[in-house]
Length: 349
Image 1 (cartoon, helix red, strand yellow):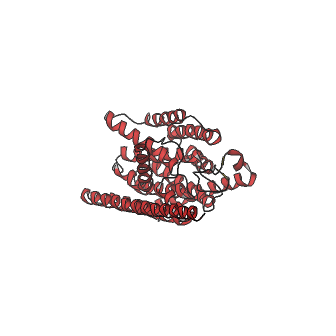
Image 2 (cartoon, rainbow, N blue to C red):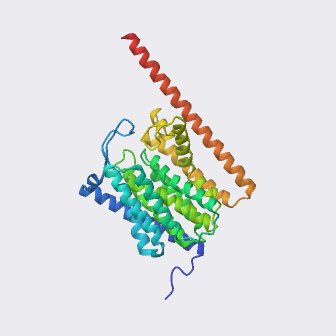
Image 3 (tube, rainbow, N blue to C red):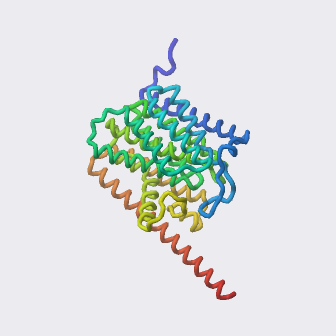
């Protein structure tokens, strides 16, 4: 009997594999989240109550991460048991982050769990790198873990970054590393299933149980691909640059003002865009466009010479800086207009 797939080229086979795995992950995640909402368990797991720093006005369950991470862990355990270190590390972060969603956890305990998870994954690599390279990589990895949490504050923001970022990883590793590609496809597909419930107005938020493990996974896959020579060190930073740039600039601003950087605030660029009059949907559309461009640029530059890689990265950094400056200018004009309106009201009274 003829196998209908015998006539397929390797590229077509990879495409079918990627489409099938992504679709499977999206369906499983979507059905599991629908079940949580239908049974009421979504509200029992954790709730996000609006406060002075929130961009939403309704109480929303913050358990979307259960669908994404649950799908990811189940599929990886079934298809890639050799990745048990990664699975164990993600489980540690899911448990600690869930407790943080429920009742809040001390920052030292949260950070300690992240360091433990990182060490568990690194223990599976032969330690042939210089100590300073390993230290810089670990710091970047930990920063990536937390910036995902910092950027999870608007409908579809973190979910869209997960879909595009991990899809770019999968595309870059598809012909060389099946295990890495599988992890990235499942992460991207699961996030696609979550987006249906996170579209404005969101019925579910990601929560720390989703954002922290996903940030960790982005760092883990970035390190894995670089360590195996699949992509240069700049590729993960470029692919996730809309998140990296926003979170890093905001952190540096708060550090310069000697503020507690781990406390919630409304100073990210996407938050300023919403505060200056843009809707959640329009803001997400702008960020989604930036995420897609970053992913496509990263994949394009992988095939370019070092000279063009440098030019492309520099041009993209300039473009992000100009967009950030434009958002700051709009936000300041809006704030000044509001203060002047308030002053006029007081004078009239």
